Image (cartoon, rainbow, N blue to C red):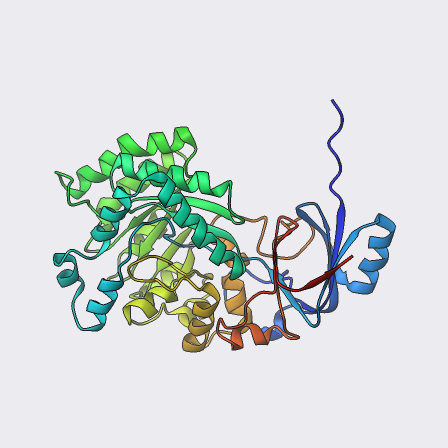
Length: 425
């Protein structure tokens, strides 16, 4: 058989600024003054991998010797690692616009649920949708995420809440993953709540998932991660502990919806050896200290705070205590319908007084860590060639515009997947 062709080289640049996010710590506060900023810089790619970053003039000479192709941005441009949204519920059917209106008019969650809304409304609509429809909806949403610069996207199940419907969702996510720009990271969230049509206790439902769903998920390779909603309205820390232990024995990684309305979930995440604890709006000093002293990535979800009109994750306190902070959109039809990661991250930064370095870390390499990925989130040799280019001359402009400034080009695995303005040769 002939040898496979060696991937060709490609030089990108010059960029007014290239922000590699290299050398920055995974945990603790970050100052903008400590963030590496390369001016008049470029990247040299070979196929889907970064070969080098550095001064454009030096890379240009190397590129000539390698007979590399060349991509030149039009005008000033700033290059960042591709953005990573580490917590979304992007696979669903239906709308909860009525819930949003009722909530803003003063109705409580329980009142909305009793009126036919809430999570169960989305479960009903998602169960009714056929796989073709669900995949079409997910792929359409991924197109919007591409325009926002998202190159890696976590997607949860959790709106099926039966073996059949959860498998349908996870198979749809797998099918869509072969047809969208992003790397989709599937997560099984069958432990979202006890379904209304399940006859039995919360413990019995979790055992049902453990025995009848997770083995199929593992056999078919549908997900490597499980999530659970640890909250008074869903599962207690005591109930979820044995479930996490069983999932870990099967080889699943753990993530947790934690401390959204009441505390207890972050402690369950730490005890369960979770990669991340997400939400944390209710976390107090004790929870902040415990998370900071653990290996769990704290993930703020400002979209839920905006959608519900509630307080934000104590991001400043978590960082100052020495914790690691990722930021994700929590895109879902109920509590976080916006789905604009960059806008939400900028707003969280203003509310919690986060440096630009801390915000950008939260949607790049720290978000990658929340997904257990170490091959992306930084622009350096050996990493995935996932990057996003903004039409400005300084990285401060990106967060300053709070989501209004959109990428002019997006690259995934060394391939340009969004190109609004370029000069190529």
